Amino acid sequence: MTLVEFIQNVLITKIGDIVGQHKYLSYGVVSQGIELLGACLDEHEFSKKHESRSRFDLAIKTLFNKGYQEF
Image 1 (cartoon, rainbow, N blue to C red):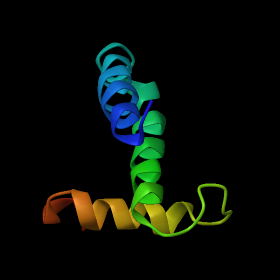
Image 2: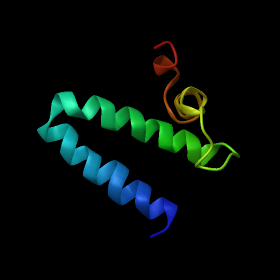
Image 3: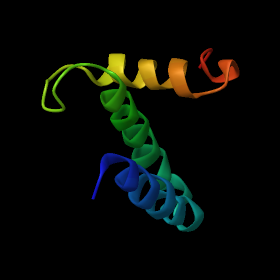
Image 4: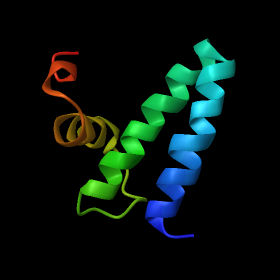
């Protein structure tokens, strides 16, 4: 499975199922999905430690509407 297929099949489809069925659990899963998208955008190895915040911020700034950057 390619990275694009993973994003489509797991992040979008499977996490979408969780969001629809388990609202409270979805917050953690969605935030980690955003961090993963940031990891796909940066130039570091996926295994690099202490990058959670910078990866999350990168994904929000790069992929989301500017209205989300405030939060």
